[in-house]
Length: 400
Ligand code: LMR
Image 1 (cartoon, rainbow, N blue to C red):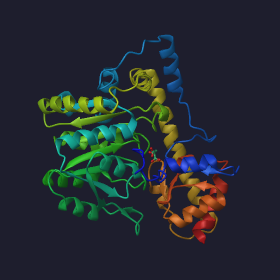
Image 2 (tube, rainbow, N blue to C red):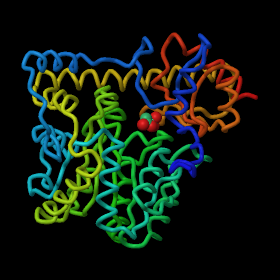
Image 3 (cartoon, rainbow, N blue to C red):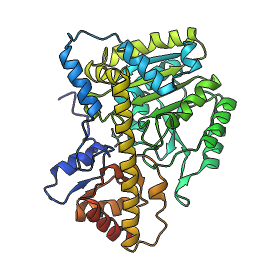
Image 4 (cartoon, helix red, strand yellow):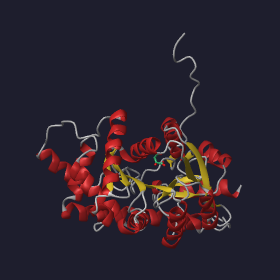
């Protein structure tokens, strides 16, 4: 008899499990387009120069590592707020935003979900259909019932905006609506500013609670353009939540550094939210780690390092776009006649290829090219050396 007896074997995680399978694959031809990680032209996770310069600076002024406060490092939170809400945010200057350092994007979502579970335990959570696989797990484990709203339209390869708005209009007041601020995961199909304006109208009219997930700021159009939804919601005065991550845009995956921001109706409400969020943090991990936040605040606090970061970020963005173009034209030259324009119009790290789970299985087993069963391919893992091989493998599977 053991307390563990009743536990069944859990399925592999649909994303991290794919990396496990990739690592066990002995084929020299293997290519990992599964997990959402940006790789450089040489196929490696980059160490940004701004990060290594900040690292040198931190080493030369090495500090003791005491506990951080429960919400994390103050200078980091201020710098992150400015990045997420913009430099002249009225919501921030009015003290309506409670921000906490988080254990990257997943940790931010989990703290946000934990706080909302205290505030409105009976609310339903709506995710886009489809959404990042981990969203459902995070919100159900926090105790919510999770449903979905229409999002991806497979006939157009874009967003079903009318369907989305119709579903949101049916949602009862207080429903938590998870929205991807930019670089939608997994489809790469984003809302336009005009679409966001319509979403805001419905959210306001129906008194919904938007929960923006911004894990890719700067990787679609730019830091400012990509925070359009945040600034729109903030200036409208509605309460909402934003989770952000520096895993992708600083290539700081292993440091687990991000933030959770609660925009409340006024500073008094923000104070109450912060007091409860601290308890959520205390029960989960007490207080966040130091190093990643020290790196990010050093970079954001220095005009020279920040300038360098912005250059490196825009180089990553440009490289992804170049890979999208090469992937599309490669498939066209390989004789694929279906409309492939979605590859170059989708934004961010992912392309939603339209391949079935069976075709993705074939891609993996026959060609050792790893994507997700949903058909998602991480185009940020393509480079000039693996492009021809991936193109011919995908073209074979797509054309079959
Ligand atoms: C992804 O979607 O692949 C990334 O966000 C990594 C993860 O944690 O799933």
